[in-house]
Length: 87
Image (cartoon, rainbow, N blue to C red; front, top):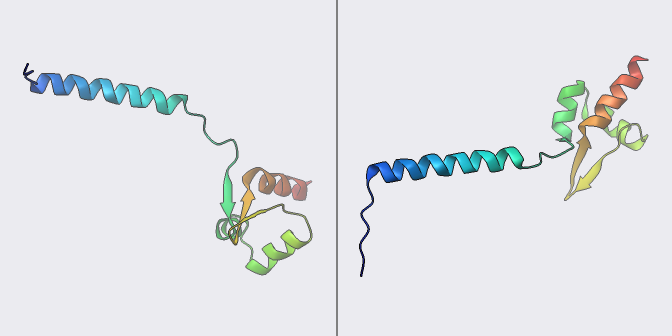
């Protein structure tokens, strides 16, 4: 049976190598292409009430996705809606 002795220097080198590899993986990882906001966040961004947000949904002005009882809104759709109002 062979016994290897691990020194503090070996551990430090391993730590450095591991952190470098993790950073590389995180940089390569694709970030989500869309940013999804919940109703509360949308109301805060637009400074509107929940009733106004409901009207925007019902009228089709603002698209949404419902997942498990929660409404999610695409950030690009909100930006698009705001830019159309300014014209």
